[in-house]
Amino acid sequence: MSEPMRIRATLQGDVADVRILMRHPMETGQRKDAKGEIVPVHFIQNVVVAHNGRTVLDAQWSQAVSRDPFLGLRVKGAKAGDKINVTWVDNKGDKRTDEATVTS
Amino acid sequence: MNRRRRTLLELAAGTGALAAAGLFPWASARAATWNKSGFESKAATDAIKNIGAANMIDSKDIAITAPDIAENGAVVPVAVTSRIPNTQSISIIAEKNPFPLAATFDVSSGLEPYASVRIKIAQTSNVRAVVKADGKFYTSVKEVKVTIGGCG
Image (cartoon, rainbow over all chains, first blue to last red; front, side, top):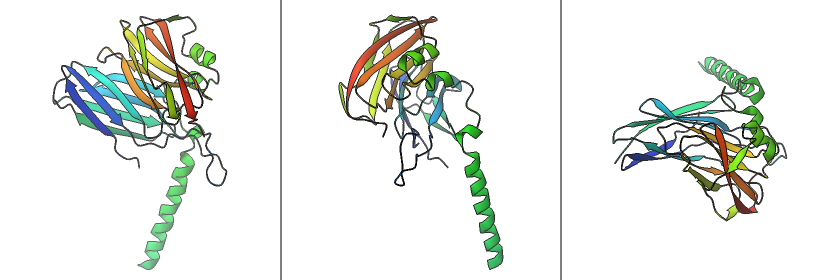
């Protein structure tokens, strides 16, 4: 149902610079559609990032995060070939997981 | 053959409607760790209280990277870097948003205490970063002027 994330993890020394682009409408519940009806609130609530299976970031979001969210983080002690795994869950219970490999 | 196809279509339509009904937010369980009281606070002071940060210390060791003037409030890049040792979490609060608390990042020791995200800002307001480190709360603010609000 949801589209894949774009994850880029590039090594800078022993730190992986991770940039994640998710596809999600991130509706605030304040916006009205063409018919003047409020578009129901629909947004990513939790994002978990794991480095080689170990959770490094656990984020909680509100509807204030922009549509098609961008998330940037820096993972310490990374090596080329390491796995970065990202999972998001939205307020309707939809979820998506994608994985990327750290490149030098 | 044609009749069978019709039945299948009807079945598909039926399940679609059921799935849609199940998707209403109030019917689904929220993720356990989501700070409902914090995210549903309508005033910045309440949001701060609800993330447990009633007593905050102003700190110069928190850097907020955000534009001085955001032309489009719907997409404002905000990055927070903490230089406070043992940073446990970073929260971002857009003080004049309808729901000020935008995000909380629980960072482990496997991360640099940094998070970058793009948020909506309804109107010109302070963007506040609240950092939890060693159980204490530290804060810093930066004003962002918004030309076109991001919550419409």
